[in-house]
Amino acid sequence: MNGRVVSRSVNADLDRLARLVDSALRIEARLTPKPGLVDHRNDGAHIDMDLRTLTASADALGPWWVEFALVGAQHANGNGTGSRPGLGQGDGHGDDDDDDDDARFLADLRAVGRTLEQVMFDATDGVNTHKGAIFAFGLLLGCAGRRLGEGRRIDVGVCDDVGRLATTVLLDDLVASDRAPVTAGERLYREHGLTGARGQAASGYAAAREVGLVAYREALEILNAQPHLALGPMMRDRALLHALLALLSVNSDTNLAHRGGVEAMSWVARRAEAILAQGGALNPDYVRLVESFDDELIHAHLSPGGTADLLAVTVWLSTLPPVQD
Image (cartoon, rainbow, N blue to C red; front, side, top):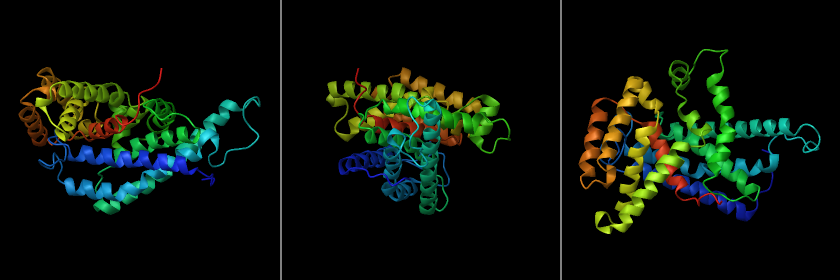
């Protein structure tokens, strides 16, 4: 980092955004019942983690999320590590400079991400609880921090910033053809064209923004109009379960493809669609429907961890104002 000074007011806003990430992850973890995922009901289709493991990981990561936002603030207006003064508009190098700035920005975000992954593994004895969340929120918080550093409004449009930035991640990590795949995600891309977490980022988290967030807000509106259906926190959780079902019905979750093949991924989507056709979490018998789905995924050893990350992103986005016209 270049040591650029961040104002006290910006620091307070960065801290607030980071605390909202911590809250979103804890809300997602405690939401019950979640098909195939760790919750209060059971450990989902996992043998290596439970709710205590997720909580320990969240506790360890909590103080670190703000580091991503600080990286963003320090890269505002191209002021990141290694930026070259004297180059800019009118010098014939503007586009190259933008690319260089983004490359340095991503490099600094990845450096923080590696630190957070080690913090997570230290807290969980090597269990991967939040690697997908670190990737997603690293980009989201980084872009939000850069907006704040530039005096721009923080709203759901931060997803567009991520989409523009993450295209580089997608191209670099998946499309590179000069080496063999080294991760499950790269193998699934080569064999089936599945882009996974990188694709979600490059889309500007379209599934969370256009499916999860829409389903969540529509469910809340219906539940608020009929308060006898759910009260207090139960209303929020019921709406989030509805959003989760909506996400499961559309998300090409590479966690499912890795565990059970692309057929398993399609099967889970069809099952979620079938529950939604019965009203989803707005069905009076929704708990039984979702618990049955949960039991089926556990029996099949399937856990949609990528969709859980999108649900946490949905929760975080729900705290931001919409894009202004």
